[in-house]
Image 1 (cartoon, rainbow, N blue to C red):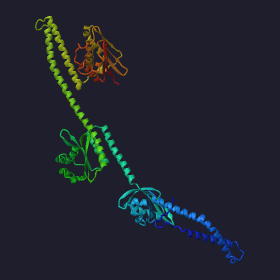
Image 2: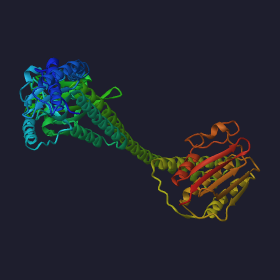
Image 3: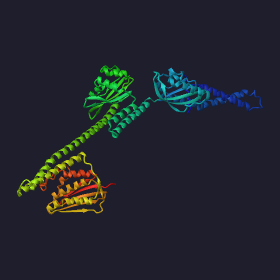
Image 4: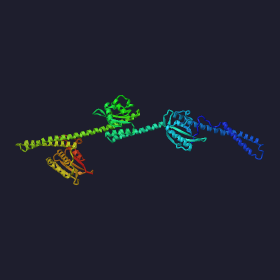
Length: 616
């Protein structure tokens, strides 16, 4: 759409209605007279000139009112209305509308343009458009006008551009510009529609800043889940700050609970040794103030701060001006301080401090998790050391106990055999009881030693190919005599197709011995015990010991595999033990990658099953 030229000092360029009417009447009169003259070619033209003139005049008088009413006045009104409408639109437009000629002089300047640039129309009309253009754009503007004057072509006509304008007070601002060209009386004009996009740009910058901030927080959260290494977390934090928030220097100090001091653990763009010395001389520097007050410390010009002269000298030496310290707080506890520094004076805004405080909070949680991880590792190492000491202590105690017990057992045996003189039957009976109790004590010491070694991880399995058929039968044979004393039937049931397994035969025999010993102990006279093995559907070998004994109360089954736990019902209270045998069985089964379980019904017996997986 072509834009009409708007002259602020000549709002009405058309002739008046009477001028228009007179011009039109004169044209009609001349045309009519000429026609009347031509229709009398053979008469005396001069004689009829008066009549022709009179006829034309009479016709003109008849036509004139009609021309005025139906042609001239409506046309004139329409033109005036269009001019008024265009002027109203331009005057009330929200965007600035500026027209210049091909020499770059401003021809029109609407009220919105006045508001945008700060100039009144009277101040800019007739003056160069460069008055509104920042210096860096002026040469390109002049070259563009010259190109249009010489070639009639332009690269920006009909396009929307984002540039910067110059306000009256000298401040630049972002604007959106659309340009159209039009001609009037052989002269070229350019009309530009200008929109101030300062608020839009500010909103875009805020969105971009929010995206950057969100990216930083996401990276810190990702670090919290990907690593618990404290050094890696701190370096990642400062790297993100260094890349996305261009401060001159940054660092993290963490509180050492043992020394009671803030220690610098990570730093960017600072001399660590010089900073460490300055912090020691100043008692921790400004970070100590942040740590103790648990709130941010914002100093616009640290070089003018007189609270800590030693640290101030350091900042002056390295050209650092503005300071922001933020406490690293997790679950109400201050872990340390995040420090940010600039080489130019910078006022940290409340919004900036708010985001950095959130950043510090997220970092503090990650640091806290890392510290807990480090603490856990340290405690695990101490626990491992304690287990080793416990195993060594247990071995020492076991050795010290077994030696006198063995000597006592030997003495009791020699007494029973009459090596030191004649022994009566009553004395023999008591000597047998002594020997039995000593053997029980030796078993207890051995169980305690085994358990300590297993818990400390000192027992290494000596795995080899094991024939379960042979191992189970040999273990059962060892208990046939003991079972026979109570007339208990001890039988084996082993799958003949059972494959060999890779296991420690001595440890598996220890498991079977514990289970068989318990089965015989808790099975009444003339009861039944079955030892068996078979392959399950999940590529695992099952080894079981089933008895028809007293069974186990349901409420006590869950505690069977805990240290020093025994059944406590009155039925089985007469059977005393160490409470370690089943724990040892469980640990040996787990050392083979398997497990142990029990199925029992009180009064009907129990079945203990050990499962060991076969290799894939």
